[in-house]
Length: 565
Image (cartoon, rainbow, N blue to C red; front, top):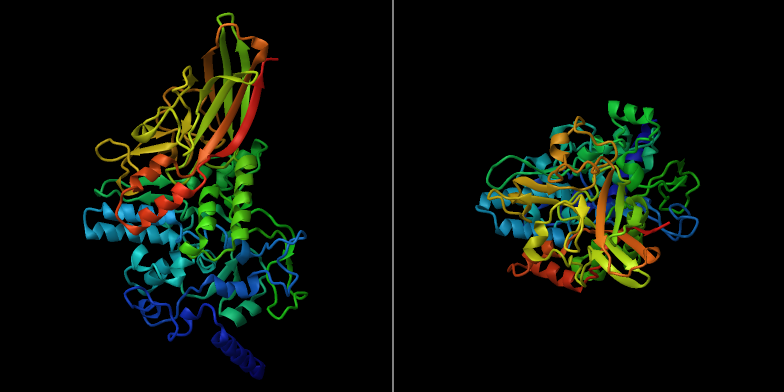
């Protein structure tokens, strides 16, 4: 027995010593240096790093031509590493829009101390391994730009961040804004109760450990609940709250909320079920030596493609892959963008035109009903995101009326420039200048709308579609309640209903009247890009150039046609 343990220890030492990836935590001669020359090993206080690059995990969790595991029956790479690499999670630190926005915020900071605070907050979720490396050592973060060449930061939301997060404090306020509790214990948590730990221990030095919290929304909620600290030291601002919105919905799987939903015949759903769809029974790893038969089959096996709603940025990453240093192949990025567009088109919303009629006064009246199918607001997350109704009234092929038209840059024709930040919520639309835009608009201290995240002090408007079951008596209602919808009684949890009244040209035949309605979506509207234009810094200049060359057409979440019957 003792001899066996010695042989195992010697094999483990030899294996770790021979790895060519992730050596920053093992070999101080080859450790990645930050721009100021300080080694990560030194930042860590002389101890090994708790984290390693995703390439280390790829040794067993990537698809290989020499293995049968981690390929779909249709020949697609469905490995954790392969699907993750082409996501916004993997590229969170390389995201050129995020980098441009951080630089914009830092340039406007009133003091160097405030600039450092901004960088420290932003790297917490966009470069979490670099952030937690400093945190574990009791050192100050090097920030976003000080970590520009740190391989751990460049890995974005990497494997050894999420899978080393402990359950401590998850779902509590202390965990929000990236407040994960991670210890240098070399434990990798997974959802399966009987982990096969020896191969991982041998190849990486991490111990595979069962963690039920890996399947809980509270894990995602750490970074997907973000409060920004107001630049003038005012109250915290709820910049992004998808997790809190989900908690106050029929989708929540937590405690009494889930019980109530089940009683109404609804099935609560956590974040992972929608954003990490089940791939079916599969081996989740491969043997580097090519013998996969002894690796257990897992069911369910959830994709690490993290399908969301930002195909626009995935396209920019693909089109500028070499300049941005993106590791995923163009084919993988295109596949991820297609999956994102499918998700948006099939799983985001339903749209219906009802009660279409033409009165004796020649006026067409009808309602457009939008139903939010997601477990959070639509759109949710980053404050720039907006959705809107594009509605056309036609007689045959002739367009008689349009609300929500847009130009080649994707800008709404009825709302340009600064006015784009000041569009009201509508319960009734009678003119083409009126557009129903679902968005959050924030004001700064002076009461002016702002695109500076760190200057947001209050919500001027928040009429993003609520999730089904949202209640004023539910959890976090204060931070997620709609703002600026007036007494619109049709704007309720899960749905909105907009009345249209359109004057038709004289002689229009009622039987020829057709209504076409779209629900359109943009993750980065033009009026959020414009404030970056002209800033004398490489990050804003680079993103504006990339955005100007990108496809600006909005995404279609739903489309429907209404006829007089």
